[in-house]
Amino acid sequence: MIIDLHIHSKSCSDGNFTVEEIVNEAKIRNIRVMSITDHDSIGCQEKAMALARKNGIRYIPGVELNVTFSHPRYGEGKSTSLDFLGYQFDTRNKELTNNLQRIGKYREERAARILDKINAEFEKEGIEKLTKNDLREIRNSVDGVFGRPHIANYLVRKGIVGTKQEAFDKYLVKCDVPKCPLYPKEASRLVRNSGGIIVLAHPNDPHGTSLVKLTRSLHEQTEIIEETILRYIDGVECWHSRNDISTTNHYVRFAKKHALIVTGGSDCHQKPILMGTVKVPEYVAEQFNLE
Image (cartoon, rainbow, N blue to C red):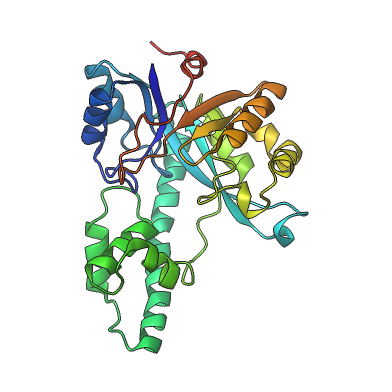
C-alpha cells in the first residue's frame, strides 16, 4: 500500500499542482492513503476530502504549521523555525480557521515589507524598483497562501534572476522579514482542541526547516525534543524524501521510546513529482481511524 501524508498544493500553498491535479496524480500512482498538508492553510481540505473519496483514496485532513522555537543551549538562544504537521482535525473548527486566517493576513503584510527591502537592494544595484503593480501581479499569481517562493518566481519571470534558488540566495534570505510567530504550545493547542493530532515534521531535514539549524547530531536533536517539545507533540515524521536511513531509524526508535505515532511523506511540491516515492510502512495508516 502506498502512503503519502505530506503533499503541498498550488491551490492553497506553494506547490505546483491544484488539488484536483494532485488527487488525479495520486490515483495514477496508486496512492491509497494521502494527506495534503498546505502551509498554514486548510482552505482546500473539504475539496481534497471529497475528491479523494470520489477516487477511492482514503484521506486524512492535514496542515503544516510553521512555529517559532528557541533553545537556550543552541543557536545562542535565538529564535528559529520548525514545522509541525496537524492531522485529522475538524476542518470547520472556528478557533483553528480564525488563527490561520490571521496568519494569512500577516503573510500579505510581510510580503510587502520584503519587497521594500528588496527595492533597497535594487537601488544599490541600479535595478528598477518593484512597484505596487508588481506586488499586485505577484498576489494575482498566488492561488493559496502568499509566501517567499511566489516572490522568487516573479523575480525569475522578470529576468532579474535566473532561478528561484538564485532569488533566495541573492535577495530573499537577506531581505527576509520574521513570520507571524506561532509557538509550539499554541500550535499544539490549536490542533488538539480541533480534535487533531500534531507531529514534528522532518526533524533532520538538511535543506529545510528543521533542528539541523541548531545541531546536526541526531542524539542532540532528540534531547532538544525531550526537553522542550515532547509535551506538545503526538508524533514525529520518520520517513521523508530527504531522510537518510540513519535519520529514519533514529526517529523510529525515538518514537517507540516515547509511545509517539510515526508518519511519513514525500513533502512533494510537484517539481519534481515525488508523490508516493517515499516508502512509508503500511502500519502508519493503521494508526489513524480511517473509513
